[in-house]
Length: 551
Image (cartoon, rainbow, N blue to C red; front, side, top):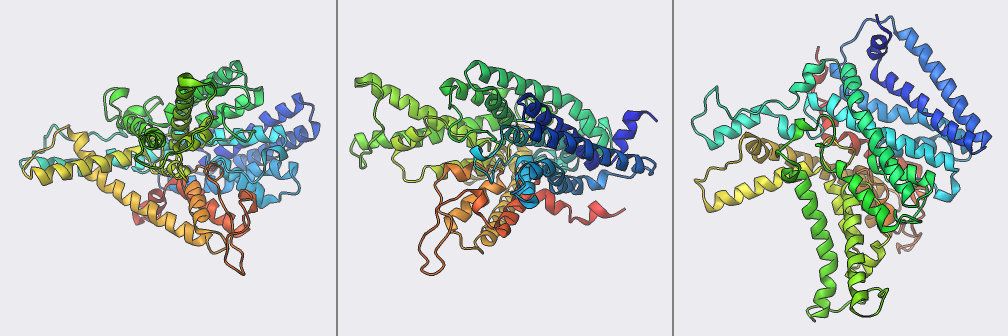
């Protein structure tokens, strides 16, 4: 048997562990170039030791008869997010001896799920550890892109259920056409037909789609890295931000806006361009399986994202205009950079860009803010504009992308269903058009999207209840729960938080001390929320289905 075939036959989680072990050589090389020999030895020895152990385990399992892995897809993904961070945490825990294995595991889980939350202030970590965090987040984004099309699409979860349910599409045809036929041209072909033609084995599909997606992913990351270098970002900062953009992890070695220290608005504009692949699957291999419109302009996810970003920008900018007209109390915008009309226009444009970029970043669950975000907040005069960012993070990016959240396609399906119901109130005998795919979105897709919304709401309520068991304010617990479930870790830093109450008086106390100030129990709850948000609650419930386990 060829060597490559032997490797593919290994358990998927073992293959992922081998890739994770070899990736430790990247920070080892960086530390060696920086003459940080202690960190270099830690990562090199960890890579050699983990690879050796995993190789011996692979040899021991090579003689086993091939198992049917079609029913183990979801348990494999769950196991990957629980066990792989333990492997990835080994060098991190050794390099940070005071942190403990649990905190190191939590940190790596946050990176692997592309949440990007950190227990440590950026100045407390060695540059190589920042690179390791960014690398783990980058690999987590690549795993999501590959697993979405190779593992989740064939079993119709992860957002694919919105467009892949042929039965509900046919039922929708019957609802609009009382005389269906078995040879109806409106039948929707299953979007996973090409996926199933590749192979029925999940391991083969992972390698097949990985070979198509990885070059595009690496190429886009390299292009953004070079662009940020040209615009003035330091090498490590540019690389980490490029990785954090493509993976939507938002991991950066620096605190503050993404346009600092040197790139400015130009760097933010380039990053915004590379955030667009997180809004729709269309640019990635396998994107044709989810196409609703024929062109990018007709893509419902892109159009809905544009509408949301524009709406947030207008909301943040329209209040000063109403105040100037005397409709509401006027606000005091930030000082202009130049006197006269030119300064006012520049100030307004800066506030508009800060609002638009931050809205796009949080919609893709990356979680970066613009250097003009504070100006946009001051311009709007709103007490808590950051709550808009939380709402955008909950909506999330495109289906089968690295973004988290509920996903734009589900929001679009519910919007189309609502529009159709309003039309039927006005014209009860009307027949909707748009083709079979549009009918599927309005009927079966909207039904499944509503179920997911309810599951997401129940999950959010459950996480908030568990987090507030400790003395934590309800507002803070809600934001932390939203950040974990949507895999948007920087959300907690973008909104001012107060962590706890005084246990005696019940008054607000203890200001936000970062994720590291939380208790072990709270961290454990939020870690489970990160995994649930990444795999999605609907997929986790699918693991309880008897049909998944029956032989």
